[in-house]
Image (cartoon, rainbow, N blue to C red):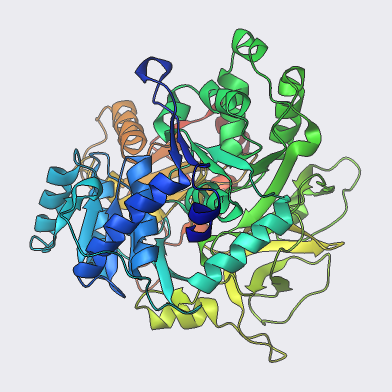
Amino acid sequence: MLARAERTPGAEALLLLPDSEERGRPKPVSYRALDAAVRRLAGWLQSQGAAGERVLLLHRSRRQFAVSFLACLYAGAIAVPCPPGGGHAHHEERITGIVKDTAPCVALTDAALAPEVSRLLARCGFGNMPCLPADAVPGAPPWTPPQTTPDTVAYLQYTSGSTGHPHGVVITHENLLANQRAIQEALDTRPGDRVGGWLPLHHDMGLVGQLLHPLWLGGTSVMLPAETFVRHPVRWLEAVARHGITVSGAPDFAYDLCLRRVTDDQLAGLDLSGWRTAVSGGEPVRPETLRDFTQRFAPAGFRADAFAACYGLAEATLLVSGSAGTRPERLVDAEALERHLWQEPRPGRPVRRLLSCGRAAGCEVRIVDPETRTPVPDGRIGEIWVRGAGVARGYWRDLGETSRVFHARTADGECGFLRTGDLGTLDDGHLYVTGRLKDVIVVAGRNLYPQDVERTVQHVNALFGPGTAFAVPGERERVVVVQELRARSGYDLDLAALAGQVERCLTEEFDVHVGGVLLVRPGTVRRTTSGKVERSAMRELFLRGRIRPLHQRLDTDLAVGATALTG
């Protein structure tokens, strides 16, 4: 960004869109102004001895987040972006886990959040850590360019993992720059592009794709608050139309939300003809969503070839594969796919339509049998392994998981691969993602660990015993909870009310829709001999209709299947 500030100081680096049309006009921030703010904060960080140390970032202000993150890069510090909280227990637990894992030297936040963040730090044993609003730090010596190398750690990207055991992905400067080049290659982004959207900046897709990438290009990052999109999805499309955004992206659910909530009157006022690349990533990409979105918004000038389906993960900085303009599809046998087999459709049998997530960009992709670690030929399903300059160094202070996940070796001796935990296949050079090995639940573009959901449900009622949560596959995954009632608790309870409490609790805590709640007798939830919940087995029992609940509340389409199986 230093070069941009020197060459085009008056150009817009950021364009901050208001929360609502009533709250003022968009606020541009030039490269000159951004660089000046970043230098000032970076000088203060250096005066605090932050070079090489972790700096916690908790911001709701998009401008202050950008300044704080870039100041860490300028100062040679290690940025640790965190969700800014929201009053929910799991937010505080997650931040506490990150703080204990990283032991930051300082926390940067917004003025409005500073008291809350200070109290949180005190509760987790870091009450002596400096916690300051990023725009109100004391005067400091001038900034000095740090001595960094490609291997210098730039930031820690905490995945949406278990709050009790957070995983900080160690991203180096080399990883970051390599992935910026890969994004440009895959999406055909261009110098001066206006890239933007509503994605939260503490997520890898928002940080790397919608803040850092346009700055790397010398373009403009156009930022809309995530809360505004959730309340009024049309505001995202209006931002694209009114502010000349050429590249914007989001998970599949966001396009589906626009389909359901943008009215005909709102559609009539949109001009999406300038939207060159519409990225869909962050969760399984549904061909139906892309097709329906194209048809719905074609009158506003949206083009089918604007869509770019992508695949990536934080452990690879962001992007692994993607292609703008070309989206091959494959029809495969649905029942075979559930067994991780890639087979042509058979007459009269259910089929599944899969969309290509493009070609590998800036990295190698191998499909490997996860048990034998033998690479499999194209057209066979296996675990997706990735190798390249964009793959992160490992997990922060977790040598065991780093060795297992980031230093995988194939049976024929090739080493240095990242095990993604995702299943897929290569077909004519295109990557198709078909499922996951791990238990992570992907809902609305977010990864939820089932143990976090289960722990939250345990606190709903004292009558609850062991329980489990898992994702149910389909056009879009949904969360299903199977919860035991304790022995001798008495079944004259209002079970419907109990199920409703579980549903409301999870909606409030995790902001997700719960597809089903099953209240069951003691001993229903299967466990291993060591006491671990067998989630895969429970999911299989549910899908086969083998669970006999005392009470259940299921979405209509799930209930139809359950009735057919259990009746």
